[in-house]
Image (cartoon, rainbow, N blue to C red; front, side, top):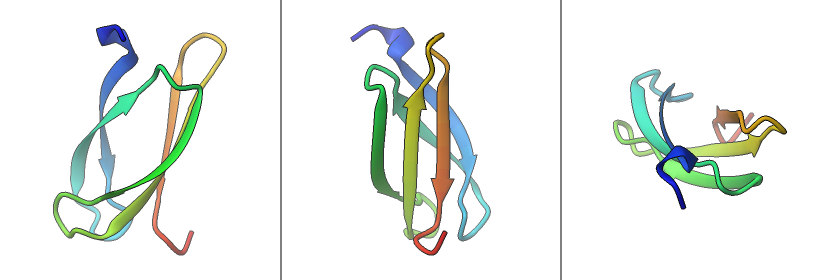
Amino acid sequence: MTMRELQDRSIHCPYCGESIDVLIDGSVAEQDYIEDCQVCCRPINFSVSVGPEGEVRLRATSETE
């Protein structure tokens, strides 16, 4: 895995609204996983996809979205 495949992203928690940093693995074309917010500890659903040009798309949602 190269460093280019790991990307640090800032997102806003869908629950508390705080900005948190997450590390995204761009070496996997599509992935869905749950990670707890570093501030309020609620579970955030992450959906990651990598486009044909290598661009990483990230969606972070609450359990009810």
